[in-house]
Image (cartoon, rainbow, N blue to C red):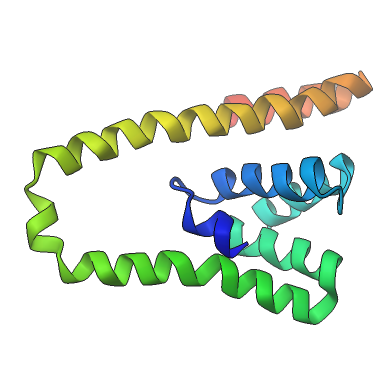
Length: 143
């Protein structure tokens, strides 16, 4: 989780995407249905989605110590990076290259979130349950 959290930009759904790729697709420690359930639970629980997902995945993979390691791995990288950036905020605030970089990162984040929507949404559509498809579409329209 430390590696995933260190190199992602854009929030919880981006981290969930990379968590799915690592723990479902590569390591096969979780299956697709579990990850979909964890994503739903992480989103509906109070708190940051990334931390909630880290709690669930960490607990499932390694019990209490796995949960603790996953949460620390999720929280520490952004905290360290933001602490360092805050030291140099004045230099970054007015830099046009930094502003352009952040705009570019926003487009990348949108692409990763669309990937999550299509990947997890395709599993709902595969079941062909009209109620599930209706709920998914209603949630999409509501957001």
